[in-house]
Image 1 (cartoon, one colour):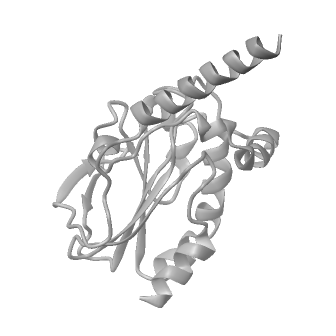
Image 2 (cartoon, rainbow, N blue to C red; image 1 turned 30 degrees about the horizontal axis):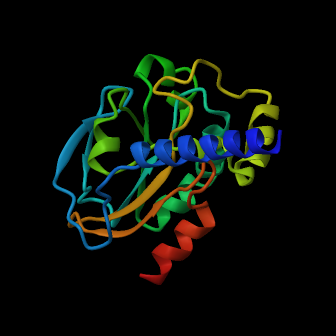
Length: 202
């Protein structure tokens, strides 16, 4: 019995390691890299240019799917403090791997740009991957519970899969990546306070 348990555990570890290797992009963006100018359409059909010459910085966030309660929990703090963020010269751009039809009912109310990237083109460009640990990591569980407890939480199937990882990039007006953060689990990202502290230190 003991040998069978050890065998099963060994196979499970191998599966997890293989899943992590396959899901992790080989190339990631790092501070000092230059993001080429690109024009995207937000979910309302308005052009969004990155980098953004009229702002000191673009905070480019990669989230998960439209109905992700964890993402909604996190982004509510950015919604509530958006004017404070903008006063520091930061423009928020948030990317989801869901189609705009899924995003509009909830994220369509956000006071900043939301980008639909169901083909994960931007995720690949910025090296943002997936991991089975996105939701298995115990540090994500409080956010999962709290996010699902919100009365007006978004709903819907997890387009693009439920194992997406978050990522944050602070991009200067010249296109240079000033700072980055690749999340290791679903609720591993910059808070508003961390973002503002970073910007004020530059």
